[in-house]
Length: 344
Image (cartoon, rainbow, N blue to C red; front, top):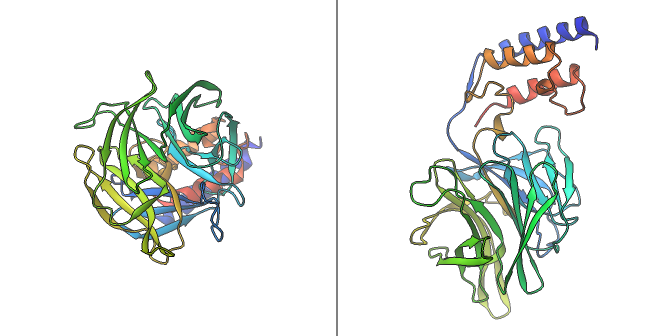
């Protein structure tokens, strides 16, 4: 590595950063990732792998992120705890893939197998060591536990005559639920939607809570995730039956769910032009959306530039923003792009 040349490039990067602004501050959970794609129906006209950031206070505001894939159907995603990685379960090849939010595309972790293409959900354990993925296989709800780093299958769970279209793990410090418990959204044949708690030790659904206040018949594609403060968010889409042969498609709506009584609050339509067919929801805790925050203080400022400079100078691959195993101008450029994008 040509250190002198690279040092000059980093010095240039620092100058550009100082012009861009001294500090970009991060707040709490204000955004959520969605991925467009119809994992169950394979609906035409859907730009599979399109990733967006939804404003939690105004779901009609959606910022498109670099395309994750052109022809792959994603059916669940989560931010791996302790990292800035947004990882999605891609149920065309039953594989875990890390999404590149800056340059687009994805990196294969591994295909976990044991699944069928269709309704899917995904969530990480709170310590980030295990990933849970679910889909329907024949007459069973199947949940696969896999190693978060390698994708190696650790356990396979089957629950007869049940379906769950999304998963979420209760975060540490939740005000009313037990941390680590696994919840999902389960559509019924009668058109209702239930919040269910799943016990993997006994392979049973230990509680079911019907949701009320949705206002339409939900379809299979849903997203579910807890914010760090414990708020439970969901993305739900569906249809209204105007007549036996006339159905009206409903755009994806963003909701909060009260996990104690099952009531929902409709926060609004995700992008009113009805172009988003959202199949997953991942609340952005500020980590994945703020990957340039190298010192982890929730804001972008000179200290992050300094941390990048130190890592770059010392050959620390923390500064490898292009993930190619090398430190060069492209990493400087990627860092600058991430810094300019700001924090939520």
